[in-house]
Image 1 (tube, rainbow, N blue to C red):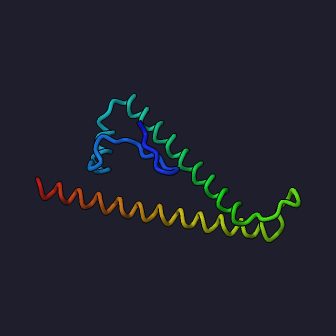
Image 2: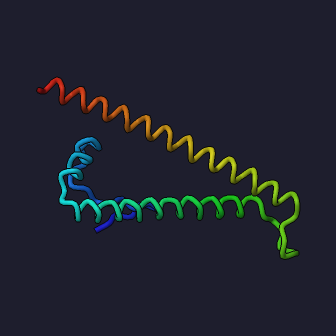
Image 3: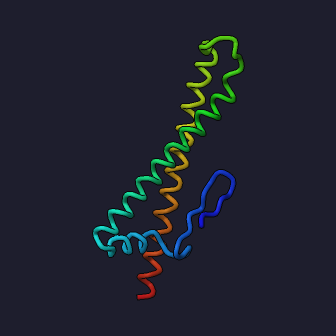
Length: 119
């Protein structure tokens, strides 16, 4: 039962407080065939995310840059606008990805520190 919020799907998890580190440990404890199934699902999610990003880029840049439909081809101004829009969108997506990775690393370090204090 997936929950939809806008265009984003929230996938159900077993525990929202479970750290990524312990999730990876859980995956490593799975049987080999279950690990393969898990990895295929992860690949499908990554592909879906890539396609979603591409579709959002195309929609956003086309919507803001293409203003005339008098010919089959875009004019030079529209082409330049689309190229700049796509470059900005990709840079923004990369920055968000880096910030997310930094946040995840910080959370993992905090979880490891808490586990060390409890032991």
